Length: 297
Image (tube, rainbow, N blue to C red; front, side, top):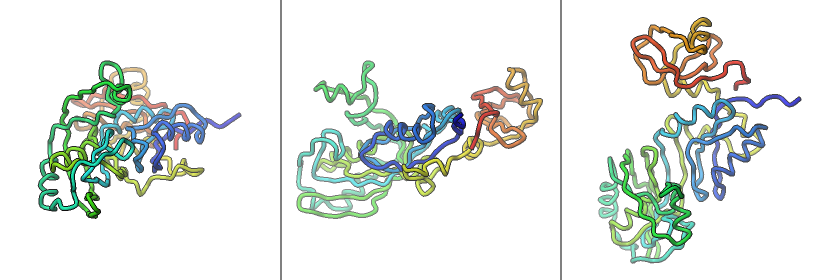
């Protein structure tokens, strides 16, 4: 009889050319279970940090999706793309070789802080029940409404000039839901020369870093993070006794001497994650229950 799959969060360094769903499929085979999900997609062209949950730890993914993200990227000025990245149909717009760095920095400043961003047409956002990229590929005109995002950092790291083009290496830290492709597009449009993304790498999701991620190979599960470790990294935690855990599981009122918290990681005496709870006036309300009897990392 095969051993049950462990529960935990895996940090994967996604290679280019694969979809996030492809990575999920590989991890399902490695873990021997179909219960695998990811916390936010990366485009096939992109590389870098992808967070995945196995077994009951998929319940934590909702709390990982909304974390801030950090990327390094290369923006090419002088050309535009139908998809706002190198995977689309690229066409020249204007000679960008002579664009000054003062103008570039001013354009970056306009796209920093709280902004209203129109997502890329070739995005997974649903319009009338269908993905925007499906409508765009079928030749439909797709109009997406602007939405608020926060660009916490938009830093120019290096530049390279070629005939007709200016490539910028940048680092971007932003709220969840930001399209780096759209930043490249909007920077180029603001400068009047067009722009698109030629490289993208996600280097951080909240407190999790690419340096701690595993390549997608035979040892991908070696760095499996216990759900208790992940929850305690994100939220305050408290250890409940056996009676409190039993009452919590049965839906009874549980009192805890702890400050109010929107989310608190409730730990079993042995350190396992029993669930996520909300604390109000010393009383707990269950947000997510975790089975403490399963195989955990």
